[in-house]
Length: 113
Image 1 (cartoon, helix red, strand yellow):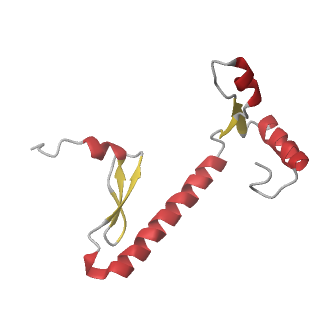
Image 2: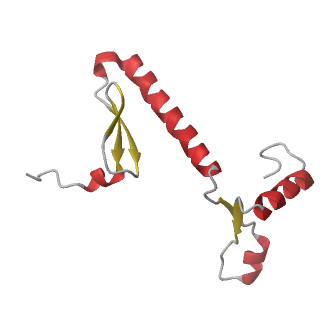
Image 3: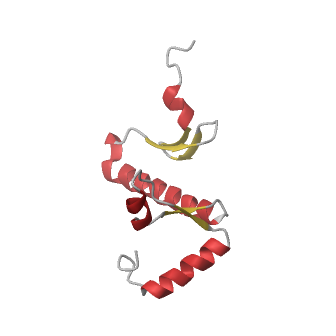
């Protein structure tokens, strides 16, 4: 991981220790039936919901909506509508022809009278 983000491995290790101590991340050990492989593989790091995850999600949503706005402008009349899925219950307008739609709507009965 340190090579991917161009950071010294010992610095990264210290940062990860601090984040784990603050309960902002938690390691999920690799799982293999072979114990040797399990010990050799690196654990996956998971973020806990500390508000930081919410901020990252908010940032992601903002970039998705901006992308849909750009697409709407680029396509003009060819743009039918843009949809962002979310965990709520109501369909919410986010802009002209752009909506936040509950994931559950994917499974709604379209023949419902």
